[in-house]
Amino acid sequence: MLDLPSADAAATPAHWREAPLPGATLLLARRDRLIRADRHEPVAAAPALLARLAAAAGDGDVVVAYDSSGAAWRLRHAGAAGELQLWQAQSLDDSRARLFSRLRGMLGQQLSESVLHELRNPLNALSLHADLMARLLSGSAQLERAQPSLDVIKQRVGDLRRRQDAAVGFWLGDAALAEAACADLRHVVEDSLRLLRGHLALQDVRLRSEALHLIGSTRLQRGAAQARLALMTLLLMACAGARQFRDADGSSEVMLQTFIDGHTLILELQAPVDGQALGREAADTDGSGLMAGLALLLESAGIALEADPGQALTRLSLPAA
Image (cartoon, rainbow, N blue to C red):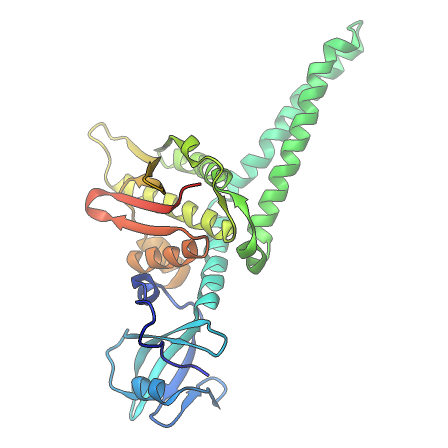
């Protein structure tokens, strides 16, 4: 049964209210019942929630409710039809999974060249050193002269295997499994930067990073894939913003800087961000809605997202290791 939160419940985070509800269910609300529109079946709801949903509401008004398992749901007012109030409804977990899936598919298309580049580099090295070995061994050269190339081939094969596993796991893996994955935060950040650096370079935008060593041994106990996807999306938004606001010499730069404030680790993205195009494509929302959706994804990894458009800063923060 859906019910309103208790009086002593924590305040609803702002991004819960603003984040999109991709593919949400449409509910019809009256004071005596709540009906799922697509199946015309009742939805169990407490009287207090029914009264709240049946009351006149402005378009976009959001009500947070909890089911009997304790899972949070968001209900967004979508209009009225006579005495009926129309609400879009979706659990928070479903919102995260759907947004993750849509963003991953969209970024997969945009970054396919970068992903292929990451896989082809080791293959090019293998080909180069295989040709070198063939030339060395065809003559009188000793085997020890070929050993360095053999070592390189072994290393690059291992590198290629790891990159293939990571690519398949991220782009094709199940979102629910990715949600539970544990990962080293520094690897998450470095992988994201590596995938985006080439893409941004093609847009004449330089991507730099500073003090990543401060991340140390910080690990994400869950939500590592969500954090990686959110960070890559933020970098793409920063690329779009940086292209709009170029420096005096016509150049554009995006900086990701790490620092520690007390017991908090902060990743600061220094660039204006523009999520209008990505927001429309990923979730039929605007830039602020997409930013709220990213906050929803990062929340699953224990990371808080804060944006300061006036200073062209976006901060990701979590407890330092």
